[in-house]
Length: 284
Ligand code: PRT
Ligand code: ZN
Image (cartoon, rainbow, N blue to C red):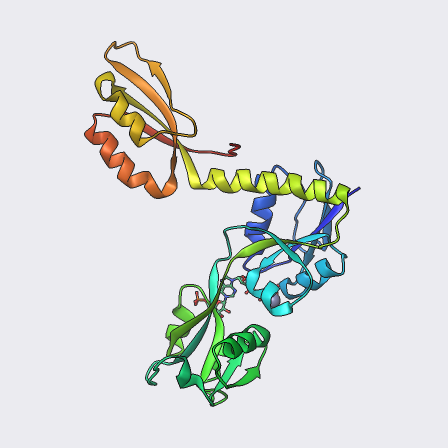
C-alpha cells in the first residue's frame, strides 16, 4: 500500500516541498523531468504536477494528499481537507492600484475593473464587503493590466512587493494571507489515514526543529538559576559540572525568535563559549 502525494513540478513551492519530505527522512529520486517517483523507505509515491492542478487531483483521489498554496486551494474550490500549514511559500493575495491614484478604502473600488487570476476568491471578498466591481479574469502578468488600460486595479499575489513597485502600483487591501499547506482527500480509508498521520508527525518534528536551536555554554555556577530561567529548554536544561569547580556547562534549546535577546543577557550573566547548533528533528 503506497500513498500518493502531489507536489509542484517546478516553481516556487518545488524546492521547499522536496526539502520538507527529505527532512521527514523520506528518500526518493527527484532528478529533473520526472513525473513520478517512489520513496525507497516510506510508503509514498510522489507525483510532480502543476500547482493549479493539485487540488483537483487530490479531490479526485488521483493523489491522496498534496502540497499546494492556500491561495490555490481557496481559488479552486475543490473538496479537499487542509491538514497542516507548512510555513513556507508565504505570500498574500492583495488588491493594488496605481500609486498616483487616490484610494479611500474599499468603496473606491465600486464600479472599477479589477484584473486577477483569483476571480473566485476576489468575488467572495467583494461580495462580503458589498463592493460592486467588474472582475477581469486573466491568467498571467496581472500587474501590467492598469498600465495597458485593461483595469483600474489588480488583485494578485505579493511577497516582497517589488513587482508592484516596479509597475507603479501600491498595495491597498489584503484579501487573504497564504502559505503552503498539506491537503488530503476527505475520504481516505484507515490505512491511508495512518500513513498521513505518520507523515504529519514527521513534518511537525521537522518544522519545530527549524525554529529551535540547541545551545551549549559554560557559566559561573553562581548565576546558574538566572541562566536557567532564560533558557528553560523543553523540560529543564542539562547542567554538567566543569573541571573548574565554580563553573558548569549548560545545554538547552532556544527559539530562533528569542535568540539575540537571550544571547545578550547570557553574556551579561558571564556565559562563555556559547555554541548554537541546528537541530535536525524535534519530538516533544
Ligand atoms: O507552473 P505552475 O503552475 O506549477 O506554477 P505557477 O507559476 O502557477 O506558480 P509559482 O511557482 O509562481 O507559485 C507557486 C505558489 O507559490 C503560489 O501559488 C503561492 O502559493 C506561492 N507564492 C509565494 C507565490 C509568491 N510567493 C509570489 N510572490 N506565487 C507567486 N508570486 C508572484 C506573484 O504572482 C507576482 O507575480 O511573484 C510576484 C510578486 O512577488 P514580489 O516578491 O515582487 O512581491
Ligand atoms: Zn500555477
